[in-house]
Image (cartoon, rainbow, N blue to C red; front, top):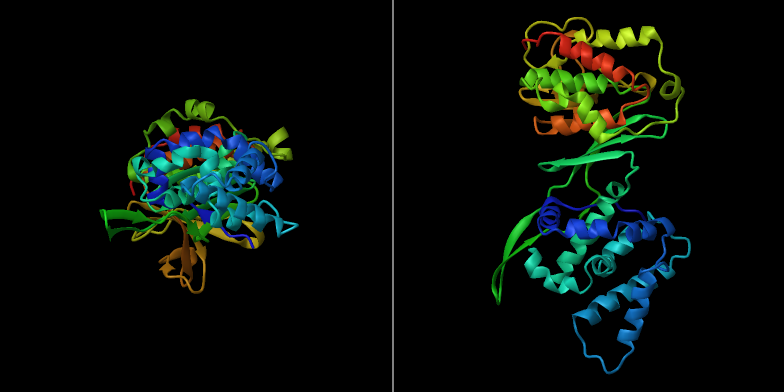
Length: 370
């Protein structure tokens, strides 16, 4: 059964700081091949399996760390072969239960230098590499429709479907760190993988315009209207490239009326907690399917995206949402803003010609006094 695996922050940060990330990316083709064909019988993994068999069946070899690694790899082979119709998604728990394969594929005998990499044991290093390969797999592909960044306890993902639909999610990647007293003194231990992390998000079928406008309104609220990601938006967009979608709007553009309508949305207010006066007209919302909406909501220096929920713990006083309860789906702070803007420029759909309309309208108006 498929399990969602993420690399929690303590392990993730050690992988980044020890340069193991670059070694993982050097093996991204081999890792992708493993997931694409969801079996072990591809080079160079098949070669690792053969080496493991030779090593373990050689009675002259003494038991060593390599013995343990190779045994774990062959145990993985047995597990996968017992599941005849296994898919790449189903492989995840098996790879996590036997992390020596991806660890050895990436580092080889470098696994024995786990202390130098900041890990308390070889197993913790293997588990961290494996959870990183699983959780960050989409970043391996240059043509990915994902844009990811981390901030604090959250991994943020912006995703565009093949038809240009928007999906923005936020995943809990926090992890525990603790100290243990051993014969060799006190050792630092930490979570090496996170199973079934809490994941929440927002979506839009037709257009990314309202999401971009809400980010710009948030920047204005924070006094960050002059950051490079806004002032130099054209240059930022050129650097980041664009992911195009399969839609009529993407090919032929929208009507002139739609361009005027999206330009007018810049004048709409974003909801702000404790603001005394009512919003000017209908506030900014992100429409979804069947009348479902997400509501951008400013709380001090944070930007929240809310969804109506009768069991929610957030109320929006006055106006259109009086008496309704909401729950938080996404929470951004000022550090998220530049990345969220770059993600939106890269993935914006379905008609990218709306971006200059929105940006020019925003930059030409005076800053709002919230």
